[in-house]
Length: 196
Image (cartoon, rainbow, N blue to C red; front, side, top):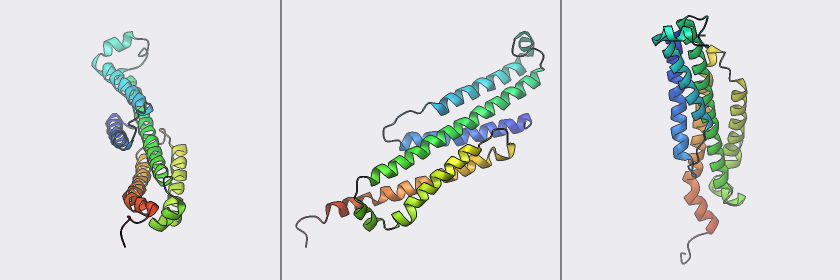
């Protein structure tokens, strides 16, 4: 695994990416439901960070404890940072999973309020572009999740960065559908009475 400075940099980067996704999910989720898995992972990451610092700040106590026997404080701290990074990484993917599900559910939920005829008249690009892209993004997200590997240092930031780009694209599609709602409502109900 990377040197301690590099580990800290990765932990901070991955944590900040996860935090951004969590904050966005909290704002976008209409039911304001709480999703615990990323928070549990963040809690576990913090626990390993504290263990690492404990080993470095109190090496004499580490030598007396069951967990630290036979290890130097530096070795123990490095192992704990590896574990913290793993939890931070899982928190990021859990947060991304939650947000991508929210976007897909919101898009589909909005569109089920309208007939196919209305959808196609207001959003002619829906069947040609939007719907196939949502399905494609869903498949790409599933593939990326299957490939996530904390042991592959080369993908530690590349994988999450790609995942965030896919989620951002889902967000753009959701916004397009949301912006079309007034036109969809009007097309579904017909022109206002008394006009024409």
